[in-house]
Image (tube, rainbow, N blue to C red; front, side):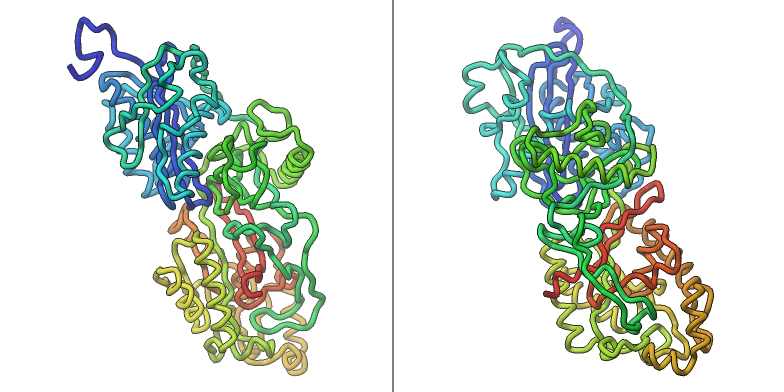
Length: 565
């Protein structure tokens, strides 16, 4: 007999509830999953599974949790029917067949999950994060174990006790070492079989639809500097030199006021349109326990505490601090202040209503090349000039940024402009990260025509009328038939669209120049062309923009040079 449903005298097949979750502390980053199998009639915990996965995305972790939960249910009874409950709208909708699965990493995992039980025996239901605490806690236990260099063990897990799942129904032996039954198929996943009396019944929750205003961003950690938080930065990294030179692009520019924006932390650029699934709020408040795994963002997070969850849910976390059901809050003064900051940021950044889960964004980490011999002289250096290589200082800058990106560990691909200085910078970084460099012509610098190699003062002296026209209109071309800013903008927009499609859900380093990088930022902000003259971009600086499935964008970092200090 293979299961309870295989024997006609054994009665109807059993019904299980599988609750699963997964998270990534950084996206991708150190990740883990958790899953629990419940008796649908009594609410008793029958099995648990959790595993540290190494560095993967949160969506991969969620799917791995689903597969582990289904396999644990099959171990208990291969003839059972299963009701899957998850707070990932993405997984629920995709496995229910209502959303297409486009990401190549998701397709095989979804197919694997679909094969565990015959079609029609598994149904899917979305639940708020507040109702998924058990799996949430297991995932964090697995990630915490991985951070210690250990494997998660059911004998040390307190998730079932802490979430009150089986209160009053645990046997004496259950409070000590548990008998591990294993899932049989998940390497490193341990499923703890329960043999005690049924616990308190837990009525199944109805599937609810996420509601409430959408949220675009969460604030950075207190004390962060710069105009936006770095989604790839380690705690303490700051943006700098955000107010800058008005005038020529590339390596040239007239002297202008410059300063560090060190006031109120800017938004970290989280999930758009309804789900704040793992913002880059470095050290930011999530819960009273002081940490949670970050999902669907490219950022880093502090260590997860015992009560931390893999990520906030669209309905519960978007209402944090507002008193809405499922909100994550704290009675302490510091948490209340952080919650107020979250609400303020969302009030400013919220674009309206939208779908609750769009998956991980394509995140472009924008690196300006290191210095060339022309850079300190502030000479125009576009795509129509001498194509200089890096200077010794520029190579040193490239080495420093490579070391910084290696520590962060979030870059998955590198794309560079075809010019010598960008390819050299990209090559230094790629050697450190163990990646190849793809070349994209659309990332090249503007062609400055007859101004190539000249300083701003020399252009002012020789071509005053042409320079004035160029400064006043994005359609004006530099002397001698160079490229206008309008033409550069159209080129960069087309390049952006190609790269977003090619690198959906991934973090990509784009090694480019002043004008294209400023243009990426300008287009993401919906700012007018003249904003190009109001940004300063230092050599070897980092900026970042995230692009979401609905076409929206979020600027996460601008002109960070902290790695050069």
